[in-house]
Length: 300
Ligand code: GH3
Ligand code: MG
Ligand code: MG
Ligand code: MG
Ligand code: MG
Image 1 (cartoon, helix red, strand yellow):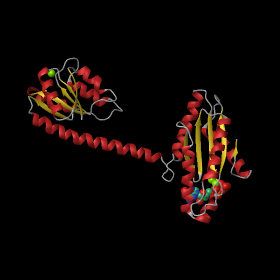
Image 2 (image 1 turned 30 degrees about the horizontal axis):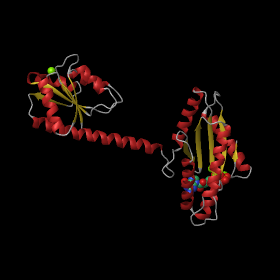
Image 3 (image 1 turned 135 degrees about the horizontal axis):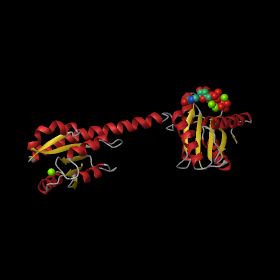
Image 4 (image 1 turned 90 degrees about the vertical axis):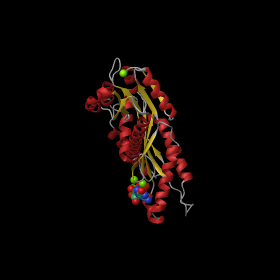
């Protein structure tokens, strides 16, 4: 564990450092409260801080208060170090945001056991944060294809439209729809349908640049967002995707059946102020045109 020691008394500071290092912790130490507060605001700050109460420039309890008031920072476990005479003030200490306290002079074994308790809390907190992050990602993901789901890709479209307007750049948009997919399901079953749907998703995903995005807009429809792409670049990519799918995607049990996709492509020109619904409408119209003209094609 990475631990901050803030203690102006050199004897106690050295003692703490020696103990913590001996138990395998990584130690950062400082001599006053203001320095401690500075360290605890950094993005890679320690998981735990042992703060002396009486320190120059900023008291330990003031550091506790400041830490608890800052938002968007992982939880830092705070142990307040007090002289015995301050024991009556513990209410104040804990109310200022400390999780625990240690009275000077302390027995190393007491420090050790309090650190073990802290480790349990910190571990719990970290597990909670990673579970939350995983849930956030899952909530944006389409479970079948692993692409962004409908609401996530629409959010991205809104964001990218705003960004490209702000930065005076063009934005490519492609709406893709698998051809005669109902027939595939009806003839070969939904499992085959699902499998080929996943394969189409994978082909699209692996042929995009790092900053492009693709989501499952609907059942067998995908929305591709291409920052900084003009109409020609957008159509070129759509054409490449079309060709790859039509050559590559065959059904497992019936490899003479090729899957095809129709594409409606559009590009919002740099500086044109258009909302996301209008952009979708334009891509949709191009897609219907592609379907009307015989499918397995790209229309701009
Ligand atoms: P078109 O070429 O005009 O697009 O014809 P289509 O049959 O693809 O279009 P339609 O919209 O009539 O049918 C879409 C089908 O996609 C219907 C639905 O059963 C199927 N579908 C949607 N989501 C899934 C899915 O998750 N798995 C499978 N297997 N099929 C799906
Ligand atoms: Mg002191
Ligand atoms: Mg459809
Ligand atoms: Mg379809
Ligand atoms: Mg249809």
